[in-house]
Length: 360
Ligand code: KG4
Ligand code: ZN
Image 1 (cartoon, rainbow, N blue to C red):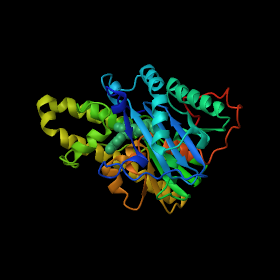
Image 2 (image 1 turned 180 degrees about the vertical axis):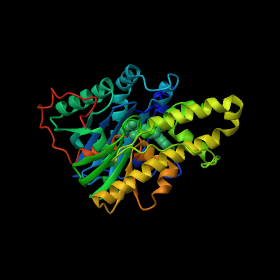
Image 3 (image 1 turned 180 degrees about the horizontal axis):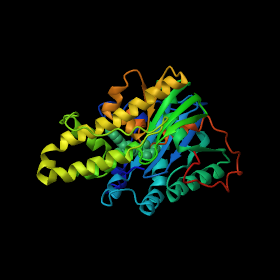
């Protein structure tokens, strides 16, 4: 699972994703909610992003606000669940307000609330779920409980370039590495998963060994540009079927770092990062291609935080890639998935519980 930051002031903590910023950081002309459009309010608090979004039922993002807690957890080297829950509690209301403001709508325009029910950190999930229930109950609205993984897949169903199933989806994040057979908008079948660490976790642990801080995926990605990916030969685990394994790779890096010693590590850090990233990306690409072939999928799609990785994006030129701002956790993807799940009618959701993990 991932990371992110508290920021000193609330204002700085609210960074906007999806529908709010243009490519160069300038405010983009906002798609205004035209009267009559049916709106979904999405909420995501499964790990350390407090996020709220407003999406139309045709998949247009009107607002996508993400407040990250990365800096808050960085000093612990990973997400501290109790700290994350408390921060979600502080941020959930202002983030929701910000999303509605940005979309230029009031709650009266919302026709459904979509919220991450699981998997994730249970205390963190409960904050979002309770907020969603309270809002839905107060406005007599239905509630759409969303599986976080379905949310990542549904990041592909948003405008301006919605992807139509069927396709093979590689979901690579801090908590999961999955190969999914997506035949319809409303669900998927799991073809393969990691037997130990997730790909994002491998990036984060590798970054820590290289002294790049936490979270480390983006830091390794950046440093790799200065390094030689062929400088070191790291092993790619060959596990049977369509599963992955990354723990051996992490151990190989640990031994290499020890063998090199502090001075040499300093000198070879970029080469190590590049070689390590090459091994992770190689494993992901190889398995995704085999899986696509096995199920006869005409298209490969990539979602999740690791989908932001530049080498992975370049390695799959024909693939449908989640837009960068929708790779890491956000609520636009949850609202998007909320369009395809069975909603729970008013008041029946009051006893609904969150779940930390799925049986899959
Ligand atoms: O999807 P996400 O925000 O959270 C989960 O649902 O787990 O993914 C976060 C993960 C972290 O492990 C982070 O290091 C990784 O995505 N990540 C990257 C990059 N940007 C984020 N990994 C590799 N390259 C990147 N550019
Ligand atoms: Zn995620």
